[in-house]
Image (tube, rainbow, N blue to C red; front, side, top):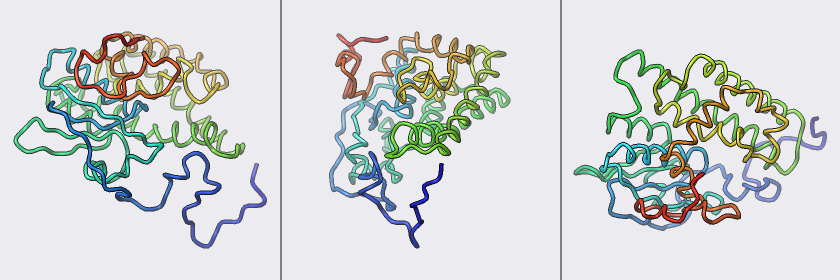
Length: 286
């Protein structure tokens, strides 16, 4: 249903009054809004993130590398509260000019450097440690295709369906239906692939699975966007369900899913900062 009262302005500008839940951060300008340095620990990698799907990609990857015995993948993880605008501090903008989580500082060599955008971070870590990304050209192309399939589809799920159904100040039929159908199509693509393959890129677990799991798993488990699982009929995608449950059982995934998580009633499932494996003691890993 169209809004008959809405007339586009001559020039769009920031609207903090009717912009909804994210109006305070949804502005048309980039750059720092506050002069504030980021904390730094002593490990080779410094991660600044939040346990959203894009953030979970990286914490799962780092925990998987540690699970494989790569001590050089040790990291400090600091929470960046995007709802409070902490991604617009000068320190964060210096490592991600796009002001989106996650952002990584690689201190493992002689010269520290930044890596931003979750897909880029996964590829960087996979290449650095020689894990979860095959070297055979055909196999590598398949993995990267599914990684960047997720990079392209994530905005339709989160900024599209999730925003207009769960967060927009008004609910309108057209955007909700448009993105609900696209979300179901995305699940159908994955389900058809997983009907023929154990993992997205073949028989081996790769960064393709690490990238896609945090976006699809919450729908399978029913922990996202109110009752979205029910009315999107997510149980129909049985191959996605099988894949999600297999990945969710991995110890590194269990750990990675709670790093930088700061919400929910059960504090045992939250880990605001991560500095060593000892930080998981006493936590609930499901």
